[in-house]
Amino acid sequence: MLSNFDAVLFDLDGTLVESMSMWGDIDVEYLKKFHLPVPKGLQQSIEGLSMYQTAVYFKENFAIQDSLDRIMADWNQMAYAKYTREIPLKKGARSFLNHLRGRNIRCGIATSNSRVLTEAVLKSHQIEDYFAAMVTGDEIIKGKPDPEVYLEAAKKLGADPERCLVFEDIPYGIMAGKRAGMTVCAVEDDYSMKDMDEKIRLADFYIKTYEELL
Image 1: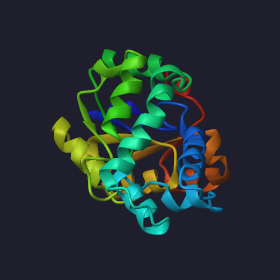
Image 2: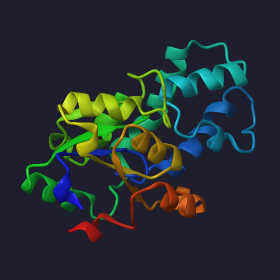
Image 3: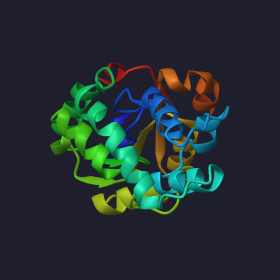
């Protein structure tokens, strides 16, 4: 799989780290502060959105008076301890990153999450040095399935999009990678098991763990 690529781009949540289920809990806790219930289908409605877009969604749909910056800061604060102490890497991820380094393949992060949380979880697992470029959801305007985050990450790496391999865990992320002109490998994740057939249909490859690539 790797022989045709100059760079590998990773989504973060559900792709490199086991964190997707945590965000549902944060939504409950955050909305409870405003005495609001979590509506059915909220996670599906915001899936793939950048952190900025998600803040806009919350502000408009729940009539929250706080500024967008305050909303995002609150989320970062609520999630920070979990990202630094609790969230594990996906099985085989560290070994695969070592494998890529051994083959001199450049790596980047392209995530809808914030830079604060992305840097926190990479540092907690001591893998931040594996990545030569990072684009996060508070630095872009359009979230996935728009290709902006992947095109920007490829640009930072100085890589041709057609020579980039993307790892993603949700359909919108897979679509973003494909729309960027990249090859996409879907990664199995408990949160998106309901979308497994769609992920297999959309992606070029599908893996259960990174150990399959070693």
